Amino acid sequence: MMLFLMKMLKLLRERSQKRKKLLAQTLGVSSVNELRQILGTDVDTVPKKKDQILSDCVENSLKNLKHVSSLTDEIVYKDSSTFLKGTQSSNPHNDYCQHFIDTGQRPQNFIRDVGLADRFEEYPKLRELIKLKDDLISETATPPMYLKTDLFSYNLKELNCKFDVILIEPPLEEYQRTCGVTNVQLWNWDQILELDIGEVAANRSFVFLWCGSSDGLDMGRFCLRKWGFRRCEDICWIRTNINNPGHSKNLDSKAALQRTKEHCLMGIKGTVRRSTDGDFIHANVDIDLIISEEPEYGSIEKPVEIFHIIEHFCLGRRRLHLFGCDSTIRPGWLTVGPELTNTNFNADLYTSYFSNGQNTTGCTERIEALRPKSPPPKGKVTGRGRGGFNRGRGRDRLSL
Image (cartoon, rainbow, N blue to C red):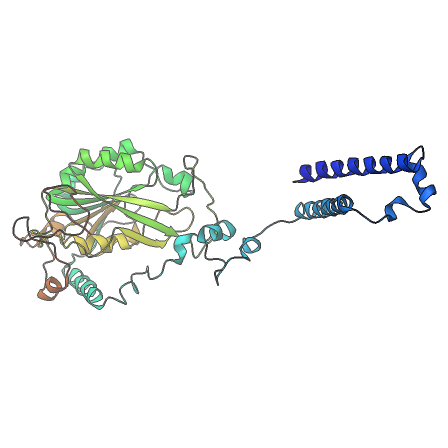
């Protein structure tokens, strides 16, 4: 723009000089400078013509442009309000991506009703179902047991039990660069692959493997296949930063964008169909998304909601949590890991809790009436179910 105006001004000045020379020749003077003497006035006081007016406008524009340029060099924009004043929205800050750039507040911070307490306020039947299931889970839960041990060397067969659900929460190497973790022994995927999970999994069972947000999505699938599981779902944890807004202290060098989510792969072993195995699973109760606050910098703690999802979905009472810690000890679970401070595990006592063959929580008539149903096997009635497990033709699909 500046270059264009300067060229225009030069052109106008050249035209003005040509007019003055023509006027000097007409009046019989030798030079343009003598025009002032003959006319008895300054040539600039002659009424301005169209080109002269345009020349003055261009000169004024150039002066204003230089002034604005000098101001913008000094202005430092601290937020987006300057650019959003002309928007039609009553709230100029509803651009959450721009708001993140301005403040570090992640867009997911503004999603409503994500907490367990208020999530089902507008769905009374679902709220009643969740309460009834939680009560039944609490009544049938085994006393919490925990075992402090080094999982590098411990033989999981010594647990002397086959588990319906296995939750694995390894301290991944990527947490060092994404979460600033330095106070725990980190594991690589080759070491995780060597865990003998298949030996402690029941014939029909589920595994939940936290795998980070990097190469774990691929490596986690290798682990599931080696352990004898089929990947059937991907639970995604979207991390909010309401309590500690700001940009990440550690940025993953392998990522193009800031990563604010983490994945938990879910695997299934054996044949489990949601329309016929209601004694073992209750599908369609929860979703495959967790939205909750990220832990403090340096912590790898996972959201407690993963326990609720597992317990609501799988009715199996034999639940194993690997790489747990004191804060994750929970009724109905056997917690194993090196970060525990104590041990109360007794293999004989633990297996005695299931000696009567009662391996599931069971179900009440009211829960059965409230829980979302899946269609019967193909051929009996028409219709298709919701959900996302065991996807494919001819398969009975499952869902959390």
